[in-house]
Length: 432
Image 1 (cartoon, rainbow, N blue to C red):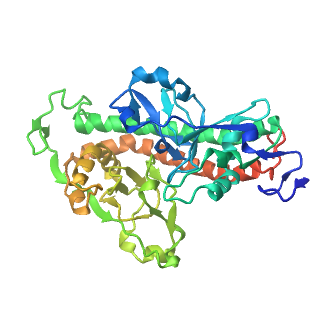
Image 2 (image 1 turned 180 degrees about the vertical axis):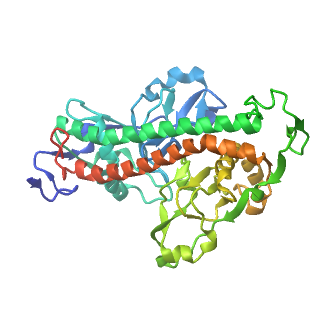
């Protein structure tokens, strides 16, 4: 295929357009809300912290303004599928589409991108271009070199964008979005499976309505309850410490001064790897054989439970393969396999307790290993624990399978993205 040479974006097909951003795209800032605007409840404010990367938004923890002020900010209200980007701070350049039906107002340092003419330029194609290194490398070159990284509207307007004709843009976006749609579907299925496991856990181990010998709910069918330091519990259950369920491991970081310790042989789990992941199938950093052999006593087998314990406290995940973690994570290696999912769901249910124990009056939350391993919890009977394990094991197996498939789909998408956006792969009726 004939190419345009010496382009800032590299070589692109001769029939593609190469123009300044503001020729085809408008960047719109949100409103610069002040701290004094915020209220305890009301309308959510969408800030850069709501953009989590890899196209994900999270509006579960937003600031608010009074609902009576909605009319004052109608022009700042986000619409479904809006393309949003963080324009400052550590998250600069992270891109996402607004996939929520909740009312949210756009904050100032969140940029919204819209096509000036949708008959010429597709917003679906725009989203993937903004997700590519063709855009991100330009952004890095232009962001200000201050302590707080920023990118301005004029900087982005003067960047360069390349694109083919509209049918080809549509075909490229459909190929990439089909992968994203499957990833999103798997994530929704996983969330439903996770919710089901948590519901069963609450029913069995908090409400004490596990099936009795006749298959009836234990407590409401008159099951005998006895006093304990944690309140009334079913007869035969015990109060123990978390460390009685398995081996407790606090992670450690191999020396960064020894580059040979890092490679691609074993996941090295840190807190960012845990967000929204029941199973961790991929980590930002990995260790070499030499690296994990330097601290073999820190290696966790598959289906160990990892709990974030410093700064961001209370995230809980499972290992999908032998792994190590850094020192911000405490982990449990179950002493028997049929404790695995009870421990996982137990730790999920203890989130508020973990945060309270980590407070300790300091600015940074810190739940040390000694505190963690001595937390008092319930140990049900072996029969009940085994029954629960065999009830939920298929749910977790499906979650793990979906998560691994998502990683494969993500790798495929990330491989195709630069090749499609640059025209390296030719699209012709979705054949390439």
